[in-house]
Image 1 (cartoon, one colour):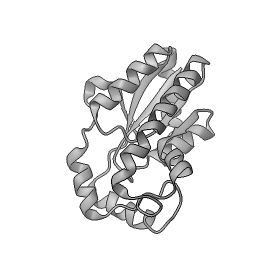
Image 2 (tube, one colour; image 1 turned 30 degrees about the horizontal axis):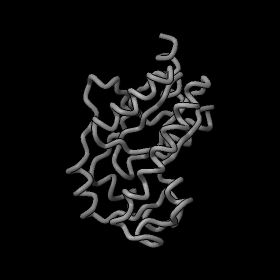
Image 3 (cartoon, helix red, strand yellow; image 1 turned 135 degrees about the vertical axis):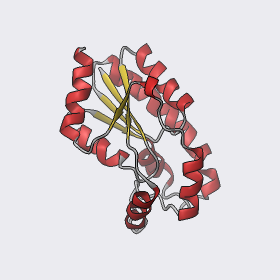
Image 4 (cartoon, helix red, strand yellow; image 1 turned 90 degrees about the vertical axis):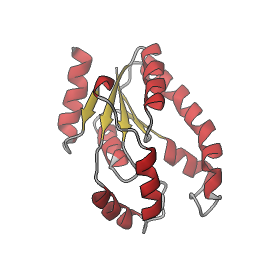
Length: 173
């Protein structure tokens, strides 16, 4: 079964794509929404510097759930940034161990577009509205490692139906 592993910076559209895949039958697993459900808003309900300690057990719980979903034969989309190759490799390895076919879906976006999207998103207060400053975005770019060609990468074109067809074709072939 396909596991769509989304890779992209904050604001690149991962949640929008994950929701579109969920509407087309994929099981959506969101780290940010689970952290929000358990702990509230980043930087509001808990200090920003504690995010990673709060995120760590959520990531592990979601990893266990996605293994069960794949083992049950379900298509899964992981709504999580996976900025570094070693993170993507770990999820791919776990997916293969559960009998899944992991494919990286990369959502590239330039700085100006991300700033525009984040300015809009920063006004919201939901689980997917992490407030990001321009300075934080600069740091994010410095830490992000775009997927390499040897990672079975699908570059998202903006068409969720085409993405679903590509993911399902990969399952067949």
